Image (cartoon, rainbow, N blue to C red; front, side, top):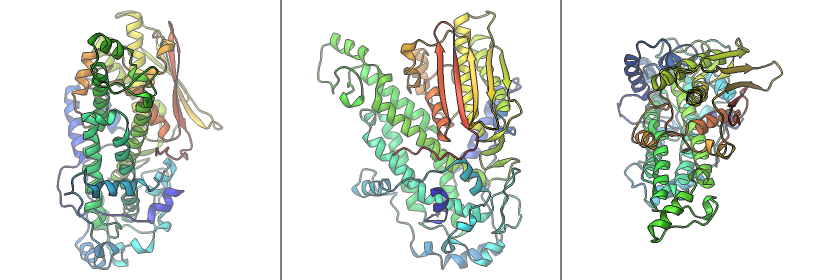
Length: 535
């Protein structure tokens, strides 16, 4: 695949000496704080993050080397390609400078390289080491003496653990993956920087401009602190430190972009601007000159933010790309941690939909009970023993979103303290099926047909405006949380669909107004679908 072909091409490492705390350690601290407040709750999102179906986020340990390795690394570094061409420091240049703009444009002109779930697993197991270029292989002494600091075992360049048990990434695997990321990440970041600059109206919002600056900072950091070719283990370790900082820095992007969409909606309603013809809205629209207050209000009320096609097409591209960037970085950083049974990085080769659904039910019930004092029962049927390779955290996010929506709709439709009809979850799979399919059915009154398009909007929600305003003011450095209200920013469903589509699946919803809603999650069984990279 194109991914495996690039695994031995240009790479880089970070010579940055920054010692900021890793994002993985920060996440652990956040989880510990949340756990104290939910000590009485037997099953929470905390447990779903640390049990077998969700790879534990352990404190990051940089791969250490022995003193002999350090000396051999120095010897090999003197003859490596990267030592002859140190990286240029772009970090001091203003983001708006012609030099930076030209650099972004140059990288954005290069094609992105897609990967599949199977390719990520095979790479983590070392099945593509034979494709590694001799020009970036460390010297024989360095390669032979290098030990993986996670357990002290000597690594072998020919190690290839292709079974379904715990798979430990060897130093050469880490070097290979780092090389691909050094080539690929600047290209992906550059594509998003240009997209953030060009999106109509939304590009003017302060929060979106902050996200663009953040992406530009990360883009320049990779280019400025790492050489093009990562040829030593020291360079790989330094590159990992850079990516840890980037992973942490981008943790709040989900909320920042939602805040930008909220700012756009507020600007439209207050009359600061109107969507133009290129935004896909029906009716007239233009940048606003002065108008009468009555006309202004009527015009703003007529604007349906949820139907602004170009804005939502941009947000679809942006979020699917963000998922891809975080999967690549998260996979690499997880490979550098001690191995966990049945895991290759963040991918579990034996993901159990039944176990994931059970944990999502616990989390959704906790949120619903906190809000309403009670929660509907959930019945699970179908293939409860089935497992397949997937990223458990992605599936948990999707199922939590669907279940909390169903619980909220059921409680509000039937009334508090009513005898709620159960929510039904069906897991379907067969040896000849191309997909694992999970259906969530509720009797929560359904969705009006006129709202079906809007449920995929990134700011369509039935939550109170005060809750929305409070949510966008909340800056959270993790992607998923149960601390938010049961209904919040409104990006849960479209983000869930993006997660499903990232590895070739999908999410669809059928509703019967006055009765209930059926949600269908499609997940590819083989994991051989390449990620859908937006231009």
